[in-house]
Amino acid sequence: MARIKIPRKSTAIDMTAMCDVAFLLLTFFILTAKLKQEDPLRVDVPGASVKVNVPDVDMATITVGHGKVFFGLEGTDLRKSLLEEMGKKYTQNFTPEEIQKFSLIPTFGVPVNTLKQYLALSTEDKKKYTQPGIPTDTTTNSELFNWIYEARIVTKNLHNKELRFAIKGDSHENYPEIGKIIDVLQKQAVNKFSLITALNQGK
Amino acid sequence: MAELDTSGGGGKKGGKVRSKKASTRIDLTAMVDLAFLLITFFIMATTLAKPKAMDTFWPDKTKKDVQLPVPESRTMTVLLGSNHKLAWYVGAPGATPPTVDNFGKNGIRKTLIENNKKIEETHAGKDNYMIVLVKASDKSTYKDFVNILDELNITGIQSRAVVAITAPEVKMLKDNQLY
Image (cartoon, rainbow over all chains, first blue to last red; front, side, top):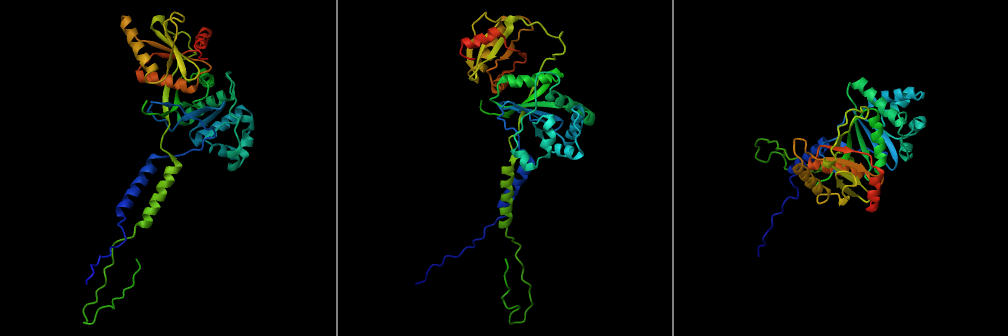
């Protein structure tokens, strides 16, 4: 009896379409995504229905959470001259290496007098070190006030633009903590600033 | 893939020697592997949800003479208390007892829309809009504060102000177990 022969099919699959899809997705992710930045102070940002994105340039972020205040400025050139100015103000001589190191830190929360020690730490040690936050009070001579003030001057000088401010507060932070920061900003007539929120839908 | 030509070349009848056509198919498996590996890396290493910015405008504190008088009958005061609750009253403080309310669609948003309508109906003239005063107590969280500003944005109430809370208002919150 003749057996019915089942023709053997090749196991090779045409990968062209799959390859196309994979690279399409890859292109999409590369174009839309922004690299995750390791925040030294983790905050849980409250949700809101706002759909405006945070601008990327000429932007300073004041992070408030767990009773600490951190300050961040976009742009390495701005950070360099900011530290120079702050060094002059607080009579701390920052070396060019320290300024270079500082320009690579997007957000920090150490008092000026311990900034040198912090910058001397290695990248690994910096991650382990818990930063105490920038000293803040309601007077017009607190460190935070001066950081904000100098950052505005530096931005005006280098980019000829008004520096924009954003407050990134933790959801569970009590309102007075945020109110203090708003007071500091208002003391130097910064009356327009943003509150950073996350988009929540379906509310 | 690598294959050896074992056909014996040519054949016995002395015909033309034909070079074998190589297949144009390339094995793409490795390339797909690589592509998916990169996709995985980008998904893990990046953030897709960009932070959003809620723009706020505050009065200039350095200028004292620009404050406009506010008729009490058109104001609605929102007091932010503890446990993500709030209390509100319309008009002068103490004239009407405060009402405790929740955040959200059926809470303060409804109240804001209703009060706005009521005030616009009972007041004549061009300037008959409602003015909302937000007073955050020491026990309220930043989330509540952002929430109330967001509700004001959603309901389209433009005339709002953030004012420091006073002692009688803290007492109001205390009476309602919100402090």
